[in-house]
Length: 333
Image 1 (cartoon, one colour):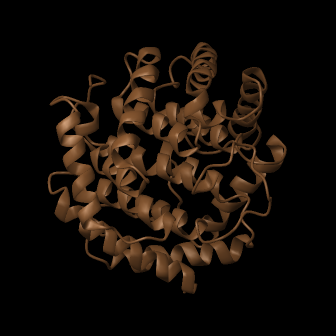
Image 2 (cartoon, helix red, strand yellow; image 1 turned 30 degrees about the vertical axis):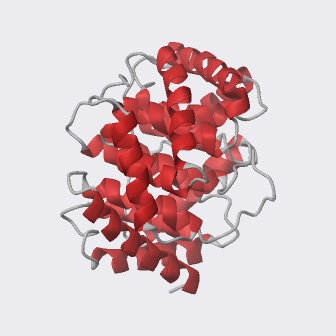
């Protein structure tokens, strides 16, 4: 196994256990998702700092706040990794409140992750402009695809709104990719899932057709090993973060399959917490995070401590958690 991948797996496993002990009532998949925050940063959890961040959130978030719902471990982890946990939370809540006004009927967990994207990209200074651009994008997408555009698109939409491309240009590429994947290639996935992948691909360098072909080639590489890569919204979208890595597809798939097999034998990563396709997706994110992009720049704005691919991985992980939860969340804070 790739030495760096093995190192990241060990960090993930350790951090997942720490989070499980500190957030006993959260879903196991959320512990994994939150542990990825530390894993991408190559850090083990500072338990004392995590506890301080948790206490601050408990004190300053309302009883029915979205910050105390499914996204709580993720938020506390982000706070604990920041230079000033209290300031991070206050800034996050401020952006969350502004974004919530535009997305009244949306799930609070997705809105929180959208707000996290803005903070982690160090874009608090123009958060209002990003939110306005995102809202314009979301309205137009909803008009084009009213039955498949929803809360799960917020996270990717915010990332797209932080690029210097116009809304119409972004939507034109998404529509081109959507049509190509759905009609030309005939990808076996739902329309919502294909739209999600198309949004992620729009964040990457290259032409729409080139990027779609790369994603399909990767998908087929798994099939060639008699492994079906997941085609749910979050699973399929995760393929988008792998298309531009500086490693050939054969080696990449080998490493992902090896990582998935290893994780399947680790407590907390087995079938009680993840199904095989979800575990494969997390394995892909771990492996992908260990390889550099072929391009020195991204279509999306650079972030402070992580690449666009790492941010997308966090979005995908949170989607899994929210879909796993049966608890109703609210945007009330």
